[in-house]
Amino acid sequence: TISYTGCATQVFLLIFFMGAELSLLTIMCYDRYVSICKPLHYGTLLGRRACAHMAAAAWASGLLYSVLHTVNTFSLPLCHGNALGQFFCEIPQILKLSCSTSHLRELGLLGVSAFLVFGCSVFIVFSYVQIFRAVLRIPSEQGQHKAFSTCLPHLAVVSLFVSTALFAYLKPPQSISSPSLDLALSVLYSVVPPALNPLIYSLRNQELKAAVRRLMIGWYQKD
Image 1 (cartoon, rainbow, N blue to C red):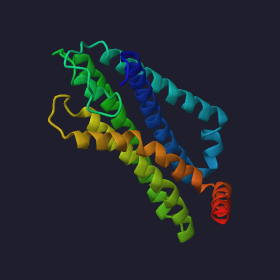
Image 2 (cartoon, rainbow, N blue to C red):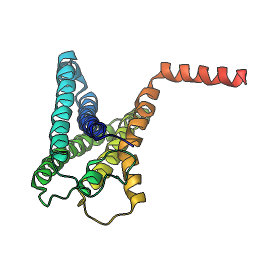
Image 3 (tube, rainbow, N blue to C red):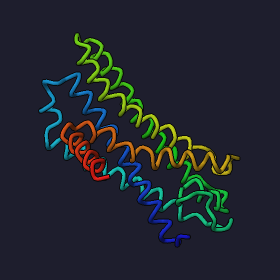
C-alpha cells in the first residue's frame, strides 16, 4: 500500500537514479578509454575539475529527466483501478491504469529517452572497440588480463541495465505480457545493477579485499 504522493515520489526517485546511473556508467566507460588508450593524457582529460563537471552533468540530467517523466505520467487521468502489477511504482504499470487515449507526450518523452540511451550505448560500444584494440596490442598476458578484468564487468553491468530497462519501458503499455516477466525485468534493471556495482568495483581494491578477508576469518574463528 502506498499513497498517491508516495507513488509519485517513488517514480521521481527511480527515474532520477536510473538517469544518473546511465550517465555515470557512460562516464566510467570514458574513464577506461582514456586510461587505456591515452594514459599520458589522463591527468589532463580527467582532472579533478573535469570529473566534477561530468558528475554534476550526470546528476543534473537525471534530475531533469525524472521531473519530465514524473510530471507527464501523473498528469494523465487514472481510472482503471489503483492496483499495480508490480512491487513498486513503475511508469509502464501506471500507464496501464490511464483512461486517456492520448499518450503523445509520453511517446515523445520515450522517444527522447530512447535517443539518449542509444547515444550513450553507441558511445560505450565505440569506446570499448577502441579499448579492446588497444588491449590486444599489449605484449604481456598479465597486462591484457588486468585490462579485461577491469572492463568486462563494467560492460556486463551496462548491457544488463540498458537491455532490460529498454525492454521494460519501450514495450506498449497495453501489450500482453506475463506478470512474472515484468517482475523479472524490473528486478534485473532496478535491483541487480546497483547490487553488483560495489562487488565489481569496490572489491577490486586490495585493501578492501584484505579487510573483508580479516572480517570473515574473525567471524569463522568466533563461531
